[in-house]
Length: 81
Image (cartoon, rainbow, N blue to C red):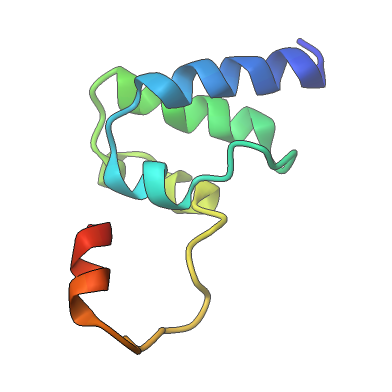
């Protein structure tokens, strides 16, 4: 499977997954670790829980590296959840 086929498969799998952290912090457009992304998404669709997937955290590329404090309107933050 070439890079474009893998990216297409990732987008298809991503649309099927119902996982908060994947939906929030997974970078569908990134070219990093395409095989790992496919594996994690397939494992989730197969019914595995995040803690059962060894590389789950590795695909959360958008997850902030440092703790962020809430600034501004708390209701705005709650609406995003």
